[in-house]
Image 1 (cartoon, rainbow, N blue to C red):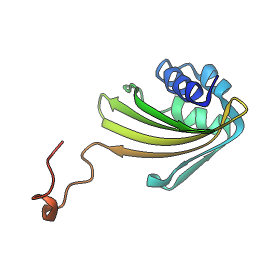
Image 2 (cartoon, one colour; image 1 turned 90 degrees about the vertical axis):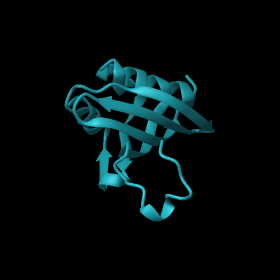
Image 3 (tube, helix red, strand yellow; image 1 turned 30 degrees about the vertical axis):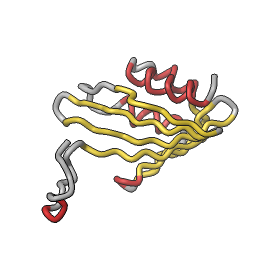
Length: 125
């Protein structure tokens, strides 16, 4: 699979809760960073557990991917029945058919209010 196909498969398998399938896409020593919450997930098992144990009620919609060499950027929407709608911009590094690193920026839609000084220049989404 190409790096883009691997990242697309990652999100498809997450949506399906196919944890063995997700495991197959990750290097054993994968490192995924979440700068917004200042967390680093080290190792495939920890990454799998963090995702598998997240409270149910969520779904995943892949919005787009952009790739350059071994780097794939994905934008994903993750609505949750009780926790709102989240968006994530992820930067993945894929080597030898496995994801070896990721940096994900998670945000809840509307959680960062627009300051009043910008009102004359912007439109609400």
